[in-house]
Image (cartoon, rainbow, N blue to C red):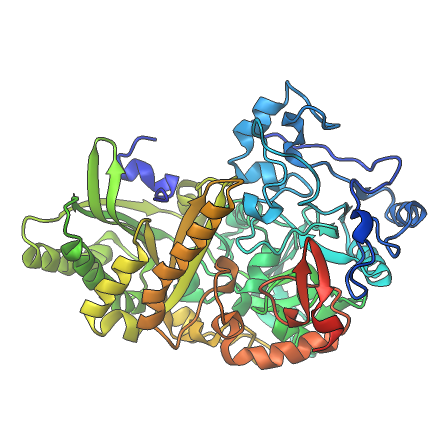
Length: 601
C-alpha cells in the first residue's frame, strides 16, 4: 500500500545532505556505448551512438564551442556507488543514497529523474544493481538562455537525434528522459520580472493587472517567495521543485484553481524555441496556434518554452482545516466507502462555496499499532473565516455520526494562515522521490459525485483497493468559468465541468519487471471503476500514463486541432515523447526511436 503523503502523517499520528553531482564534458567527446553489429538494422530510425549517421566527435566539439562549453556528458548519478564506474566514490555514495528519495537531488543533476522507471533502473545506487548510461541521454545542453536551446534543437534536427527536455525531473509520465538522446536541460533558465500591467509583444492592447515573467526552469518555491513580499502569488504547483515549464504546458492545477482557474488559463505570453530551430514569441497576437497548443497541449511536443508571462493574483489569507474521519478497520469495507461516497457527494456544493484542497481515503491503513480505515482531509477557504469553514463541515459530520453511529470519529485541526506562502511552507508536497511509482487518475464531475451513491461507493472502493485513493478539489468555478486570452487554450474540455481530480499510485520493486507489470495492471483495474462512473470525463495528462485511448482521455475534442498544429510546427518530429500529441508515427525499439511502418502515417 502506498503511504499517505508525509506532510499528513503527523496529523494522523503515524510513525514517521542533498548532493549535487557535478558533470563535465568528457575530453574525448566519445559516447559511452554503442549498438554493436545491428547499427544499420533500422534505416528509418533516429541516430544513436555507433550508427553511421551519429555525429562525429568533431561535430560534438563544434557544438560545445558554439555553446561556450555548456555541452555536458553526465555520468549516471548513481554511478558513485558502483566499483568500476569512472565516478565511483566510496565516500560520496552514502550521501547519494540518503538523498535519492529527495526531489532536490534529482532536480540538481542534469539527467536524473524523480522516479526510477523512467531511466529503466539502469544505475540505481544499490549494492548489486547494474550500472550503465544506457537509460540516460548521451549529451546534455546546459541552457541558460534561449540561444543555447536553439543551438541544441538545430543540432538534433540536422543530425536526426532524439531530443528530450528536462527541467527538474518532476515528471510523472517520463517525457524528460530517453536513452540515445540529446537533452536540453532548462533548469538554469531562471529570472523573475514582475509587471504592474503587461503589453504583449506586437499587440495593440495593454493587459491591466499584475503579472510575472519567469524563465522556464524557475521553480515554485522561488517564485512564491519572490512574489509574497508584493502580496502576490500565482496558480502554481504543490512541490517546491516543480518548475513552470512542464507544469504550465500540461495545464497546471492548484489549491487556488477553484477561484482562479488552471495555470494555463493565466498565461499571457511565451517565448518558445520551435522544432524548426526558431526563437519565437507566442501570444494572442502572433503565433496564435502555438500559443493555444502550448497552454495545455503538453510539454516536449510543440516547442521548448524558455520563458513565460503569467497573471499573478493577490495572495489570499487561508482558513485551513485538517480533518480525519476514521474508524478501527474491520473485515467489512462497505460502511467505510459508503461514508466516503457521501462525503465526496458534498464536494461540488462545497467547491461552489469556495472550498479547495486534498482528501485521502483508505481501508486497513497501518497507523502505528492500530489499523484504521476512513478519510484524511486538508481543506482551505480563501479570504474567509473559521466560522465559514465550520458551517461547511458541521452538517456533513452530523450526517456521518447519525447515519453510522459509533463507527467513525472526527478530529478537527483548524489553522489560519496570513498568506498563501505561509500555508505553503507548512503544506508543500514532501512525499518521497526515488522509487518506481505508477500513477492513475480520473476527473470527476458533479454527476459522477452526486448521482448513484451506491455506484460511487463501489467505484471508490475499487479505486482505493490495495492503496490510498485521493480526491482533490482543484477545480470549480474558477476553472469552469475561465476565459483564457487568445480564444481559449488546449486544456482538456472535461476540466471545465470537473470538481475532483482523483489519483491512485502504486510502487513496484526496482529491477523487477514482474512487479512493474503487476503494479500497472492493478492501477488499470483500480481506475476502471471511476472510468465507468465518469465515462465522459478524462484524466489529467501531467499525472497519468496508463491510458489506452490517451488521445481522447487527455485532450478530448481538442486532439484533432492539436495534431494539426503538431504537424505544422514539427513536420519532422524533432520532438517526440509518449504519451504526447502526434507521436503515432514513431515507436521505441530496443531503446531506439524508429518510424512506424518505415515512416508512413
